[in-house]
Every structure is written in structure tokens, then in C-alpha cells.
Length: 296
Image 1: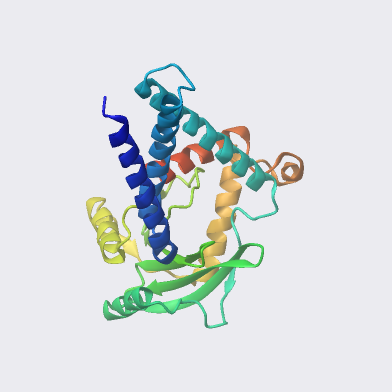
Image 2 (image 1 turned 90 degrees about the horizontal axis):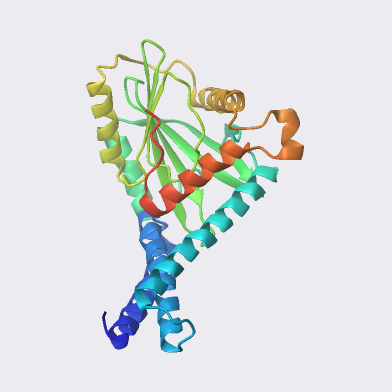
């Protein structure tokens, strides 16, 4: 077993790294940095609590036994917190599938150098902006989205900006294509938990670790190539397409038991018991593994 001084030094070093990551992420708003910081805090709680109990002889058990026990306690605490948050969201008036509207205010793209460079990259690759949209997600907070399309109108890039409590802005991308048989291929890097169901003719690949838009588009095109998909141009504008998609997802997930029927949601909440479990599992996987459920 390492000496108490070594363990204490490691704990202090981990605390310093965690604080630095939090400060850095206030500007970056990176999901990957958040994942690293969550694991650090988990180990800090486990080893720090075990060290305190050993140092002050509060519990007469070996250090590693205590560390494992506190590791499991942290998991239980996080699980209780997540279940409480899911229940609160289920009972709240916040929409699960918000309705989009045209954003005519001109503030659809944050004025940050890294984001402005991404817009210039899109333009340089032949993508043009089709529409700027927004959707209220509650409390006067809006999800702002810009839709870009390639010259053939067979590939749409949805750039969404998610405001964070720190004031930073996280950007996520969703690339979609429609095929001749009516299937939809969707590749995104969203880290927001869903946990529900998609239509059978949807082929969804969620890759939260892929933060690079060029690589995400490359991955999407590779998926289309592997499937030998015959893509066709989009015929409807993004606003009507997104709102139709939101309505279809609400209907499908109600039919499949992920959501309660609308008439029962005021009394029982939006999520069924199975729905809450699926959301909890997706939250845990995204927060600590950076992975989403497989939808293909």
C-alpha cells in the first residue's frame, strides 16, 4: 500500500487538476473536459474519504476496502441525484420536443473566433445557410440553430448552440441525409441524453466524442458509402422538416411506452417508468463514458 503522504499528495494534485479543468471549461464548454473532471471528482471522493477515515481511525477497515466502499457510495449518490433530476424534468412544463421558429434577430451565430472559423470553413466547403431557427427550451432560454446545406441539397448540417450556466456556449452538430427509399441517416455529436426511440427507417449514429465538424461530416459520408445509400435532395425547408420530426418523435415514443399519453402527463409526468430508466442509463453513459445508446 502507498504511504499516507503519497496518497495525500496524489489527492491534492487531483484537486488542483479538477479546479483547473473547471476554470478552463468555463471558456471551452467541452463535454470531453467535463467527463474527465467527473471521473476526477469521483476518485477524489473515494480516496479522500478513505484517507480521512484511515487517518483519524474513524472506521477500522483497510484503506482499499474503504476506497471501494466510498466509490460505490458516490455512484449511489449520483444515481439518486440523476433520478431526482429526471423526475423533476418529467413533471416540469419544459418541452421534450420543442417547436422551432424562424430566428430573425440576427444572433444565430455567437461571435467567438473558434466558431466564426467554423462558419468560414462551411462556406469554403460549398455549404450555404438555408435557415436560422430557434426553439425555447424553458425559462426564456433558446436553443439557436443554423442549418447549412451542400450544393446538391443532399446533406444538411444542423449547427446548434447550447448556452451553459457559466455563460459559455457549447456547439453541437447534426448531419442528415434522406435516401430514395425514405430512410433518414443522422450523424451527430450531441451529448444531451435522449434514451427514446427513433423510427425504423432512421439510422442514427451519435458520437459525442467527435467534436470536429469536418471529421463528423467525413464519418457521415463514410456511413452512406458503406450502406450504398442512394441519397436524394431535401424537398422541404428545415423549419417544417424539424417540426415534423419533433411531432413524429413525440407520437412514436408515446406509442412505444417511453412517454405517457398527453392526457396523463399532468398527473404522472412525461416519462413512464421504463422511460426514466432509459434516460438515466443514457445520462450515466454520456456523463462518464462519453457514449450514447446504439440506435442502429
